[in-house]
Length: 254
Image 1 (cartoon, rainbow, N blue to C red):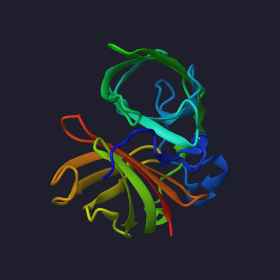
Image 2: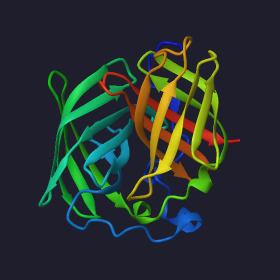
Image 3: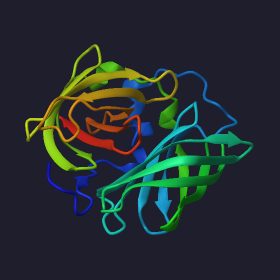
């Protein structure tokens, strides 16, 4: 893998539809389990005070997964934020978030404080111990309320992934049982499983890296997968158990 100097993963689909836009959900339009009307749960998409685009989700258990773009180019992914938060009467707080930054800042701890109107808006601040604050505003994406369809993901993908050590192009595949296989240009092989999350239009991901030349031989990461049917693109976010390394993956079906 090559060392990351700048944000190097091209964001080829609209951040406003990271989970599949409302117009694309006809391919998986079965009503999902009723979503909470009192929490910050859902897909969210918006912008930061520094001109970045930000998009991601809050799961039913309060787990958060967000991606953000470069401040100078909204077609480049600059990092991802993962954490666990609590919704309470219009206030959402995560005190254990981790920012996996691809612009040279590395892995940073963060606190997220936000206010929300269920299924409408989520507005808040990401605070870093030694790097100031980042504010954001976002709106709800109703595609979260459709049922995930594993059959849509089946196929082969060409894409790029990033871990702390760098980025790498490669190919991946998903079969009808949700088995995931990937091979990078370095020869690094990984395998895992994808399965529909119990609630929301999102999938669970567990991935294990093979031996060297993988940057983290034998390591395991867990996270989530989004799929956008209109562009046939798969996007994955995952983190390891110690939360000091993660994975960002973007692939297009071939």
